[in-house]
Length: 237
Image (cartoon, rainbow, N blue to C red):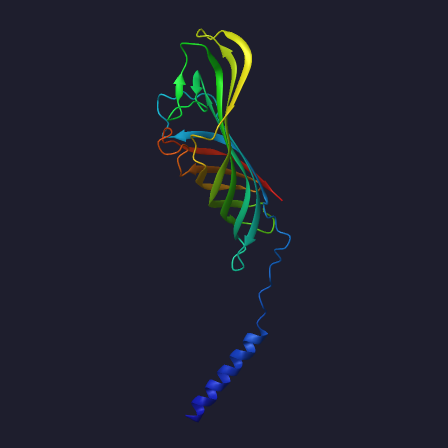
């Protein structure tokens, strides 16, 4: 019994001494890492569930700009959570269509006006103040030059909705004048929106996509459509 206790004590002492002599893992200095504070996004946008009776045209666009605060995980510096605020906007283009954004009607109307005087191009723009939150991955967090990916959500509140109609034409598409008509109203739109988003890329450039979970228009005030967009993100700082 004494021999067993003596061996156990020797093993314990040897293990303690070995642990003390073992070099500690050096800490990684994350104070100067690129945090991707600024996100600038430009992309193509469209409406999911859009009726065939609504005539869209051209390259409808999205512009987004966010300022983010990034918080890396202590246990894994390749992962971080980022929160921030910014502005997101969608610009849908229509052809030979009157968008009744200010009409005193129960629902917003998209009227085909190809058989009468009409504007060559109509744009419907919606602008939101948004608060995004992302779970981020960076393969090279100290330099920010490697593969990057992120998933998250963003909550927004509508701050402006307007139409811009340009180049009045007759039914034969002959220009009548260069008059531009602008109208603004938030009456038919949901005041808040919730979207999911994702990004993947390399260094300062990532491809992004987003999908709006909440309908664009208030219940019963317009078609049940949900905007989505895909495009390019430039990040930095």
